[in-house]
Length: 109
Image 1 (cartoon, one colour):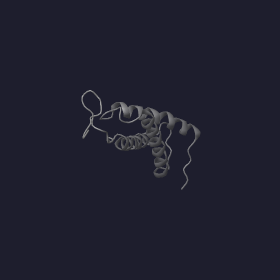
Image 2 (tube, rainbow, N blue to C red):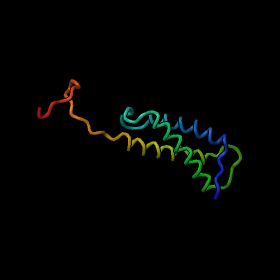
Image 3 (spheres, rainbow, N blue to C red):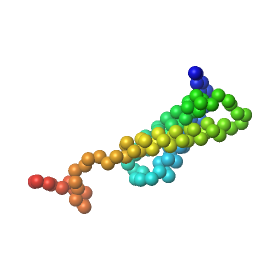
Image 4 (cartoon, rainbow, N blue to C red):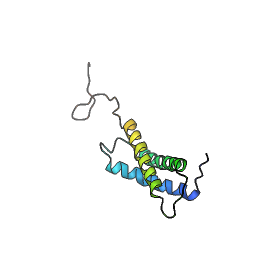
């Protein structure tokens, strides 16, 4: 099975993926500062590209006009990829305890 992706489809995937990544960062739950902006945009682009390839693998017909099902596949996979990246990258890191002033506490010292 061969999947052909045109240059225009690739460019639209880049633009659409960046938009989906930014929207996902804006409307997503949790602390928006935990996940870097570049990671959400990259995840959106990756998700849209994966959605395009999956749609091409499962559906062989090409409707005249706008292929709304392709866009649904792109958005769903982009949301899944951005969500997975946010879950991994947004995990709290082990940090040394700080007091209320922001200074590191001196345990045992």
